[in-house]
Image (cartoon, rainbow, N blue to C red; front, side, top):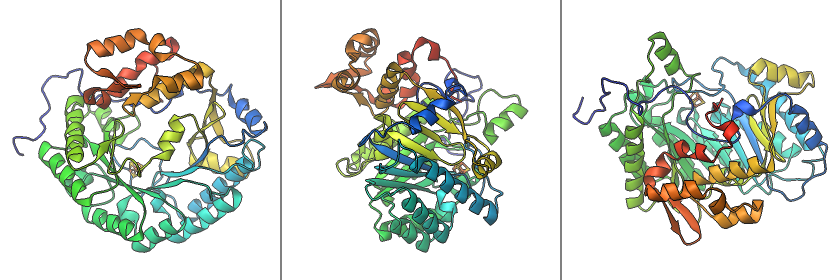
Length: 445
Ligand code: SF4
């Protein structure tokens, strides 16, 4: 161990990493989504098309080679090829349901996102057949962005070429860390040599936007190793770098071990250390020409490298969600599919509904959703909210904005309110102040 190795304090502090979800990905919190609002989705799908309103498509592939110790997604590591085929068929039936509805028919997705799980778990042939089927049901020929998440160890040169050929414009590599020891300790399936091979194949294939995901604060992370990770990222020079701060949700293997040992504090770095690591990474990226574009991303060329999925979704776009446990948003209604493989496939085969919970949002909730999500980009423009929702945010949140200015974490620049870097790195903990009273302190599950 070096002097700079992260050392846990003896006593627990408020800043220790405890179990739970801290990051805000949507609003109102998931715990308010319910069965009562399920009919809203059917009636929406039977209503007239909103014409040119932006539309996206999210496709969930729930298979992985191995379950990472920090993973909280619905993933399966034990499915065989006939299970995979059954799942792909079920998702195509689901896409047909949407494509034939009056609300979606005739519309074309502006963005497509393959998430998981591990989309790159599928073979090149499975992926090509799947995407051909998808396009024949709902054409993507107007999609400005097609994102595809990959686990580096599942890629081959041939598969990367197939991914490029079916239209992927943004390849996201789940690298997380460059140390083989840390990858192994955290249960990752890949090792660092696979990262360099995968990155080069993606460059050679000419994929226009390559993103690298890292996690600050994995089990056994150290200052020394983190500096090495940043150095390697700079050497690779991706178009976009996304850095998550490690959280330990309740459904992770790490939490199961904490429970067994009756520990409240997770065996990872505390929040100030994780924020410092991201801050240092951002500073080095900026020194090398990158621009920080959100609480967790830096891009090399902000004029060229967009992230439509995030920006359209956070701007209120419709998004059809396909697959087990997927989250969608249509015409102001949030929804999520059933969360078990068998339930999902059987329901599709028996032509039964697969949505398990929904929420018909109010206009005010839709305003708050966009307002809080856009803070995660580092700044908000009051005129946007006045034009779109008729809300004067400077008047409605005067006390909060004055308080943040007094604390030195907010300043007005031209037509925007801009967060300080320190505030941006802990923005999720600040956003609850904008929630409606009934949603404060609610769990994000
Ligand atoms: S690769 Fe991603 S989705 Fe799969 S187990 Fe690991 S964290 Fe979860």
